[in-house]
Length: 236
Image (cartoon, rainbow, N blue to C red):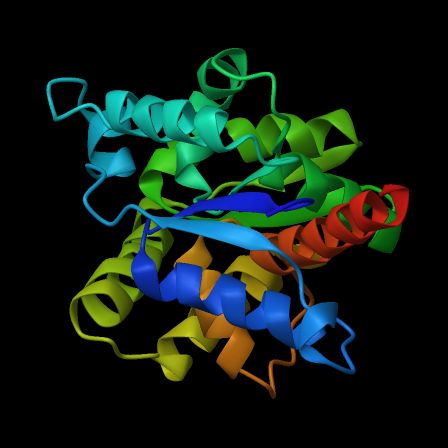
């Protein structure tokens, strides 16, 4: 197979399915051959990224991710898409392990936010691991935003939505999702929020009547992936 990219997913699997579904849906096609060429690594058994970031005595996911990168080096895709937000904590180490470019989801989301909104205060919503890692905060501050990180009570609601409702019970809790957005945006005086967790992206995919301004990092990554893949196809 020529002109293909690889998707390093499975963290979690439903969120990866959402990414692939959006990818295929947004690709303009008129026949089978118009779809994009890609290989999916659905590595569901990678240890929890947040657990390790919060407690370094927990099982380290990095060796698992590096093994995935080594396998992708053998396949030689044009580029790699890392669909887990929290795994970007390891981005520099992963990129150093390959000459194949890895798309940086938080950076792409911050760039897109700067196109939609010129500075001001934005809320960041993600796992506790992503909050502690600070990757989104750094990328958003680089392009001129003041970043609001959730207080403990709001973060617990985010945790409940991600882990209890979606990961554990396959429940898209729209009521809690809107409650979180209302608190993050309205009560904290933000103009918009960045969704920095693929479970939140899954939530956003099905919350078609969302009245709040959000930048969904996974959705932006889908668009950048399509753009990059089509550009590579034109070069061939």
